[in-house]
Length: 207
Image (tube, one colour):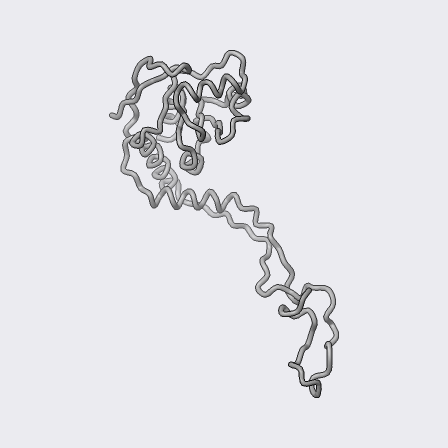
């Protein structure tokens, strides 16, 4: 089993933790991660873009000039796509971009990303994350102490409003509970800062 150091909020080593092999020591599948991230981004799309086709644009009911004798190309409507103010060819319409991916694929992608965090040294385990004053300054000091960098994904065992309020104003930092972590957020953050209890929660929820 892979082992990691446990730090306190001051950045001091206070012990070590053996990680679950299913979550943190699996075969990394880049394709699974790609498929799941693509799915998450597609599901986020609003799909509200819309433009009018030539049949929907106001006006253009009358033929602009006679068919023959003018020396110009024949035209049937001033709302054809090549006219200013005309309709759009193959105009985009509101649609639903969301789709589902298999549960096994989502799990495989999650295991792959968590394993890569361990392999790349991007996993920081805290013994606890209780802040005295719940201030942004205090939260920033914790990130500096554990060398989390500018883009950190802070994960707690349960939904902790105090932790969320402390970290929410720090640019590049997101907070989530263990049961709600997702592949896309793990990929786009450089460091995973997670409490010891949150790792136990991950094992409970995702294995």
